[in-house]
Image 1 (tube, helix red, strand yellow):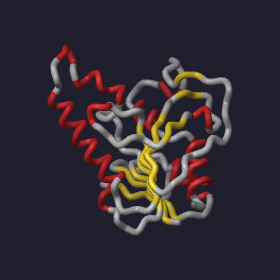
Image 2 (cartoon, rainbow, N blue to C red):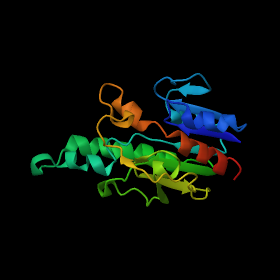
Image 3 (tube, rainbow, N blue to C red):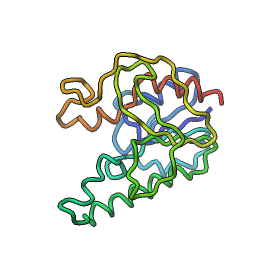
Image 4 (cartoon, helix red, strand yellow):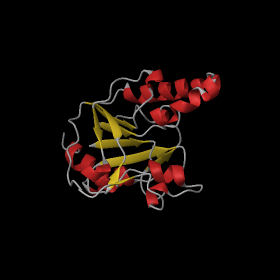
Length: 194
């Protein structure tokens, strides 16, 4: 199966599919962190190259419900922030509506302001072997819901100070954007044969 992993720099999802024998490529505007098939550039440049499956992780900064408070600082609409959110929605929808038979678009709970389509399901890292809570939405087309593979009972919020997931510094956003290995493995094993 030919798999495009859009907006992924880490290679985590890409390599999970490659490990199972698939022809997978990651794509991001920044270089990949680990060697492997990677297109550094705009995913829209390669989106029509005959993929069977796309798993997309579009930027969530302006679409996330967590960032909605920045739309109305001090009770006034921030028109610049709204414009950036509408541009992010346009990119999200270009991925969601692409001409690929099987699609998963991953993002956090979206702000209702942008009226994204209703997501198919939500998943948590603790359902896939990681003791963290970070609710993530999946918008699915042509794919079944992702089933839990290893439910961990001891859980901590991703906001607990001192854990790797919440480290500050210049790489904080990159660290938080990386897909948990258990989720990547579940995607490859469950969707690689659909």
